[in-house]
Image 1 (cartoon, one colour):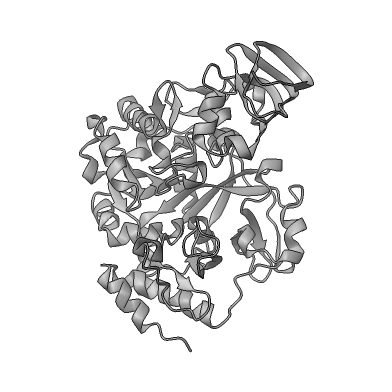
Image 2 (cartoon, rainbow, N blue to C red):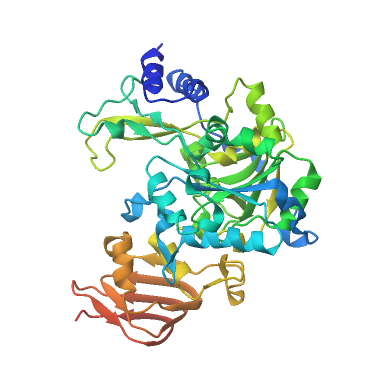
Amino acid sequence: MADFTPIAEKMRRAGLGEPVIRSFERNYQALVAGSSTDIPEASIRPAVDLPRADQLPEGDDSLLSQAVVIKLNGGLGTSMGLSKAKSLLEVRDGQSFLDLIAKQVAWRRAQGAPTLRFLLMNSFSTSEDSRAALAKHPELGPPEELEFVQNKVPKLSASDFSAAQWAAQPELEWCPPGHGDLYLALAGSGKLAALLAEGVKYAFISNADNLGAWPDPAILRHFAESESSFLMEVTRRTESDKKGGHLAVRVADEQLVLREVAQCPEEDLERFQDIARHRFFNTNNLWVRLDRLQEALEANDGIFPLPCIRNQKTVDPREGDSPAVFQLETAMGAAVECFGDATALEVPRSRFAPVKLTSDLLALRSDAFQVTEDFRLELVAEREGQPPFIELDKKHYKLVEGLDALLATGVPSLAACQRLSVQGPARFAEGVRCQGEVTFENPGDEVAVIPAGTYQDEKVSLSGS
């Protein structure tokens, strides 16, 4: 069997704590043993008949004094060409995700929850820039007190499972362990013990790029009264969500589980993506009882036994011919199977508005979304809970700089648009309104200006200037 000792020593030299090392060793041994991480279709059944958030009685702010809002802020947005925290991207009127989150916290505190706590889980790559951005919001407190930093783990050579070596850029020998690391990072930083000492009982956790997520007092009261340890917010899957992790019930013990696409056998992929069969996907808006989390960590010698997800990549993601490696990750939502009393709640789409692609950012910048009084970003009423489906030419708009060029002189109206496609180099003029299904296509190499006007259910051929 492969020797884990050199890997453990490398992790200790990097300053990682023993619980992190033991947790990684658990996943490492599963990899070496060839243990399958798959969740076959035959082992689960769809989750159905979940309680609905829109049927809950109204809540009040009283329980927020026992709550902390935790935002996952470790992502750099490299897939969109960013080299800084994705949360620092401009969303509306010069305001970033982090600016709006700060205003959400300040607004809620002013409305009747003055002791509501707030934390960011940063990565080593996002900590400095994010703390500098938070300095613009002194009402939240000292930036260094508003963060804890997630851990890192070694990439593993696909050939012999040793710690990967890459002398050209040694930092690429490491990778994030997935957002499932939150539980160990929260405990290892001392923040978990500090929160419990202050009487904080409930944590609401969500992604920093999801401005629809907020600790709704009605959901908090529902969670508190349920006495469950863990609650996952889920919403109905649409075409754009079919590759996202979905909620299911394990047949063997009736336990709720989260199945990610990386855990789906290839022969089951069609059923995985069947949104009529598996109706609910994980929004990554989670509620956790912190005292129960502490008990679970103590019962497992300081680790949290989340199922491992194995991803095969190259040590340098920008060089496809660099050595193949395994990255061992865990998903935060997979904790739904670690608590026997875990529950799920169906929430409206308004609580899920993340940015994974530039097309998502275009939707947020358009009038399909609005900034609410409490600084959330949600779909306008006429969208009836469904965002527009947007397809942008990857050659031109995969990166944020390409999207910025597309919107340099105007952001199109998408409030009544069901599907928008932009192919080829283009730029929206001010005053473009799209309704129904609209395609703009420029076969040339020169940028074409999309003239002002209303376009409804049509395919428009453009020519460059």
